[in-house]
Length: 315
Image (cartoon, rainbow, N blue to C red; front, side, top):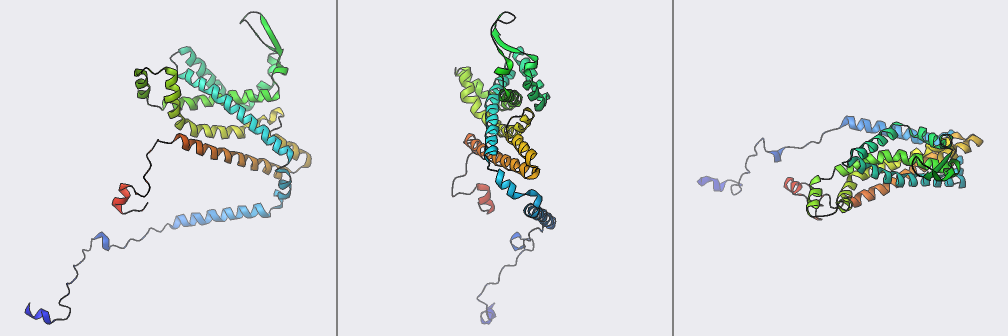
């Protein structure tokens, strides 16, 4: 209009009206998680009370704990525990791998024998197996080699051949093998069968298929459960105290049986088990990460995923 040029601010354009349903004009208010805050506060109070009790309760006897946690007797007992765990782990998984492939074979005899072994040794408690092998000489006075159902060419007394440590390793190994067999079998059947068919079509030998194709991929499924089994076996070695073997828990019992300091000596054993299981967990993490290489593509550095960029998100 002709008169608008004389009005103040006529040269400026009036802002466009904002639609009431425009998302950009809405004020975003974060959700208040009051229940979550109350739960977190309650948990922190409980943790603080527990920590205060650890520091102020004289029954813990931290001075006794400090005197025995690195003592020569306890350190030697830790070494025995590690030896039992290492032997039972290696031998148990070797035998378990054989049992797993027996179950996966086409022979009904091998399948039946492997299934029966796994069924029996998973049904019997570990402590019963250990006591049985400890008293093997009561069942077989001598062990020998010879022709089946025929003459024996060489024999030896059972007690001299299988000592206390040997009986413990046999019991732990046979018990662990039953669980390792199912872990390995589960990892093997998780591998796509089409890869084996393609390898067979290329003329790759069966043993090489297992060694170069099946096992590297099956390890991704085997390792998490196998790591848990090894950690459980480390703690399960405490059961051999019934055989009077000087492992960690047995030596802690012997010491507090002499001086009556039950709580601090149990705390010593607990601290060592926590340290050992933590180290095994760290090793499991790095081994799993190694075998997981190439399983999922990594996002390139400096670039955000397309979905986040489209939504305006940050990495």
